[in-house]
Amino acid sequence: MIEVQDIHKSFGEVQAVRGVSFNAPDGRITGLLGPNGAGKSTTLRVLYTVIRPDAGSARIDGVDVVANPLAARHRIGALPHGAGLYPNLTARENITYYARLCGVEKNAIEERVAGIIDLLDIGDFADRRSKGFSQGQRTKVALARALVHDPKNVLLDEPTNGLDVMATRSLRDLILKLRESGRCVLFSSHIMQEVAALCDDIVIVAAGKVAMEGSADAIRERTGCDDLEDAFVRAIERVEPAQ
Image 1 (spheres, rainbow, N blue to C red):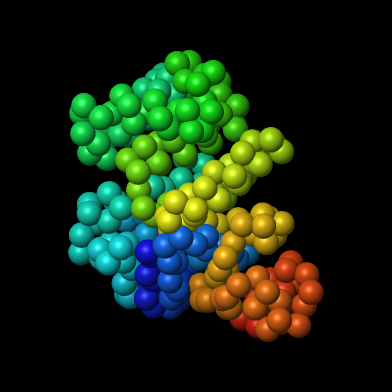
Image 2: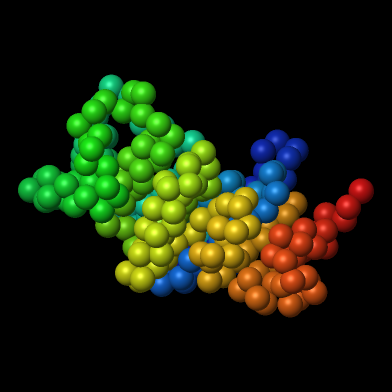
């Protein structure tokens, strides 16, 4: 479970996050939505333990990400937007390296890596150097790295960005399987169709604040909009009125 309580983060004079709070429970998919510059990626970076909030707190399965960042990292699998691979390593070597970094027991690494390669159907290129991989192949390998230590919480930042239709469908199926296995899944996306199809709960962020949260149906009802995209715009306009 992921718990975010009143976090703030500024970069100089820019207030990127101004009091964001939400919970992402186990066994559910929580969508983190918002326009560019809303504070989504900054919030995710706090959860990744890449940056420290100026105020507020965030916990991963009860572990404070500031007080105990290493323990928090062991509880998450993160796929940041634009995550890169080591180009001169094969897909298998990239995944194996991350398994070692994440503390997977040495005698279990080979089996764990083979299992994740099979799960994500990347066997055809597992032993090729990642230099020259397609966007879909890079995303699958980056996701394999994020999942190889069997984390209970999975954070995905625009995971289908740049993927073709078949790769997107495959990734969506995997996200649903992660939920069915009881994991907490938190992901950001700009694609309303994707959000409507996958998310149990939605958190809409605008101007560094939570503009609205709830199920897709609840958000549509609260905004008086039948279409989720229209509801998203209406929720944002409550925080950022149209000019």
